Length: 168
Image (cartoon, rainbow, N blue to C red; front, side):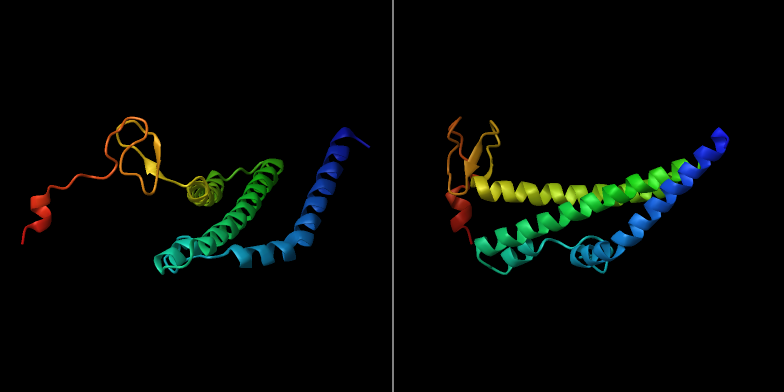
């Protein structure tokens, strides 16, 4: 056997192994896709259920559970998209046919999922730490009931003149 035929046989074996792994993984990915596919009619990802529940006045504990569930779904989706993108690049590379347009499309979907995951994690972090925001003057975190910044003493809430409150 020549070296070229050995390399060709190895490539075929790897390709067949990858294809069978993808086929074996297809039912699990289909179930995961059903669980995580919350796409609005506009084609954009739907807002987390906790945001909608908060707008309807649901309890904060329910919203946190919903956000945690959404975070888990987005994490699974992110891992799947990253795996698929890596496999796509590998398959294109071994065939020596890199299609940048397809890679950019897949990377954009991955980036959107990553951005939504980051936002959900930010909201969860705010709920867990109890901070409501940061001071406009110094950037120190403050709780939801704070009137003055604990670090610099500046008022957190905007001061409104009493004349504007009582004006007809």
